[in-house]
Every structure is written in structure tokens, then in C-alpha cells.
Image (cartoon, rainbow, N blue to C red):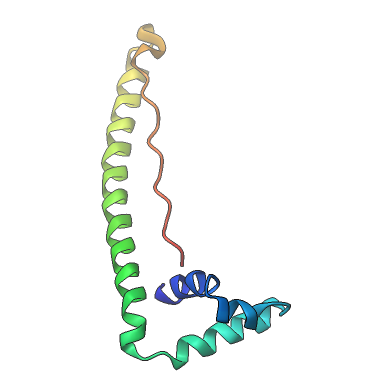
Length: 102
């Protein structure tokens, strides 16, 4: 979410780093939440745009992954019908893309 992106970015800002230093996880979450809530839409927009880009990139990669996985399954099915060819026809299983931070 855009809030998650804000939290990841906020930890690099010196002012917020000073506020978070020495706090428990619960207190850190409350501080970051207050900062997020105090921001107006204009200040939140960069995080929302970044989240939209990451979502689109993930969906594109997932579409490619599903296509590659379907091809891989088709090849595995074919290989199982012709065991005499052994592993010479084997193709590595596609790697599932990682989801953006939520």
C-alpha cells in the first residue's frame, strides 16, 4: 500500500529517525500513522503513484509468469509421455514474481 511505501521512506528521514529512536514497535507504528494521517492528498500522491506503478509491474510479471507456467506444465506433460528422452527436454520451472510491499 502507499502507506507501506511511506513508512519505508520515512525511516530514512532524519527528523522521523530521531522520533523513532528508542521506541517500541507499537510506538513507532503510532508515530508513523500520525505522520501519514497529518499529510494532505498532495503529499500522499507520490506514494500513491509509486504504489500504482508497483501494482502494474506486479500484474504484468504475474501475467508473464502464468503464461510461462502454462508452457512449462505443457512441456512436463509432453515429457511424461516420452520418458525415453529423459531430462534432455526438461525446462526449468518459472519463478513466481515477488509481490510488492503491502
